[in-house]
Amino acid sequence: MSEADSDLPVIWTGIGLTAAAMIGVVAWMLLKNTAAPDDQAELAARCEKKDKLACATLCSRTPTDPNACLVLGKELAEGTGDEAARAVKLFAKACLADSPEGCARLGRAQYNGKGTSRDLEQAERNFERACDADNALGCAGLGHALLFGRSGKGAEPKRGVALAEKACEQGEQRGCALLGLASLNGIGVPRDAEKAKEYFATACRGDEKRGCLGLAVLEYHGQGGTERSPETAVKKFREFCAGELEDACAYVGMAHLSGIGAERNVKKALGVLERACDRAPPAGCALLGELYAGAGLGRPEPEKAVSYFERACTHGLPDGCAALGRALVVGGAGVRRDESRGVKLVQDSCASGSPHGCTTLALFEVSGSASIERNVESAVKRATQSCDAAFPPACTLLGGLIVQGAEGKPDVERAAKLFEKGCAGGDGNGCAYFGAQVVEGQGVKRDVAAGLSLLERSCDVLGSLQGCAMHARALVLGAGGRAAVKDGAERAEQLCQMGEVQSCLIAGVAYGQGTGVKKDIPRAAALVVRACAAGFPPACEVQKRLPKPVVERAVAELKAALGGADSSAPAPTAPEPAQP
Image: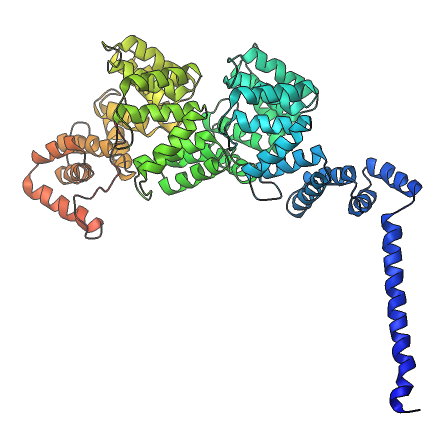
C-alpha cells in the first residue's frame, strides 16, 4: 500500500469525527429550542419570579418569549450605562415579537434617550404601534409627545389629553400623572389646579412617583387647595432627587436659588441643577442657561448659557427653544447672531403652547425686526394670554406695555399690579420695575426703603441684570442717601465691565459729577466712551460735553484694550430690543 493510501483512513476518521460533532451540536440546539413543555413552564414560572437566568433562556429561544424579554428588560432598565443599553435591546426583541408593551418600553427609551440615542420620531412610531394595540403605556407615551409638541405631528394637546385619559382609565398611572400636569398648566384642558391635584393623587396612590412629585409641587406653591409649605415640599423634592426622579433635582435647585423652602445658596443650586441637566435632560438645563445668561453667577457667560439652552431645546423643552431663540436673535459677546433660526425657534415654541415662547415672540413683535413685523396689538394679546397662564415674565412684559400706553392712555396703577404679579411669581425684572415704581411712588404708595429692597432682591436673589442696573442707578441718584452713592457707582461700574451698557453711563455720570464719590473725570470719560462705543446714544451725547483731550485718551485706551480694533466696535453688549 502506498503512502498516500495509508493516509485515507486517518482523513476519513477526521471527517467522521467532525461530522459527528456537528450533528451533536445541531441536536443540542434543537433540543434547547424545543424544550419539553414541563421545562418551558418551569422556566416561565421562575422568570415571573424575576430569575434572570430563566428569563434570559426563554428570551434567547426560538420562537422568542416576549414576556421573558420584558421581565429581564424591566429589571435592567433601572440601571445605567451597559444595563440600560441591554434593556433597550431586550425591549426591541420583545417588540419584534409583537409585544405591545415591548414597543411601548422601547419607545420610552428612545423618547428619553436612555440606553440608546434620543429618537423622537422612532419613539412616536413605537408608542403609536403599542397604543393601537390598546397598550396603556404606549398611549401615555404618545399622549405626552402630543401634549408637549415632541412628535412629528407637532403639538396636538386635545388628542394628547384624550390618550392620557385612556391610559389613566386603564390603570396606567403615568397617564394620570400626565393629566395632572396638563390640568395644572392648562394644556389641552382648562387650567384647574384642584383637578390636577386629583389626578396627581390618583397616580401617587398607584405608586407613580411623578404623581407624588406633582403633589409636592402643589404644596410648594400652595395650589389646588393644598396648604402651602415650601419647606416640606423641598424635603420631598430632595427624596425624589436622591431616588429615581433625578429631574426633581431641578426643583431643589430652584428652591436654593430663590431661598424659598431652602437656604439661598447659588453654589448648591448650581450643583443640583447640573445633576438634573446631566442625568435627566431637559430638567434644569434651561434654568442653568438663565443663570449663566444673567447676573445670577456674578458675571454673564453667554456662550455657556446658549449651550444649556441648546441642550434643553434638543431634549424637547419648548421653553429651552424659546430661550435659545432669543439668545440667537439678540446675539452678544461670544454668541453668533442668527435671527432667522432664532425667530423660527421662538415661533415653534409658541405654537407648541409654551407661554415662554409666546412671551418672547410678543417681545419681538414690540420691537419689530427683519423677520418679525412690529405688531403691538398682537404682543399685548400674547402677553395677556401668557400672564393668565401664570407665566410671571409675561405679566412683567404686559405691565411694561400698559405703562407705555399700548392700550391707549398709560395706566401706571394697572402696570404696578402686573409688575407686582410678575415679582410675586419670581420674575426678577418684575421685581425691578415694581421696585422702581415703589421708590418713585408711581401707581403705588411711595416707600423708598421698600422699593430699594425690591430692587436689591431682583438683582442679588433673582439675578436680574435689569434689576442690578436699576438698583445701582437708584443709589447713584441718592435714593439710599448720600452714603450709598459710592456703593451705587461701584455697582454700576462692575455691571459696565459685565457688559451692561447703561450702567457704564450711570457710573460715568457719578464720577463726572463727584456727588457722593470722589470726582474723577478720566475715569468718567473711560466709562462714557465705553458706553458710546457700544452704540448707546445718550452716552454719546454726554461724551460731547467732556473735555476733548480726556475723551481722545479714553478712546485710545479702549482701542488698545480691544486689540487695535476700531473704537466704535461695541465693547460691552448693547441693550436688547426695546422692552419696558
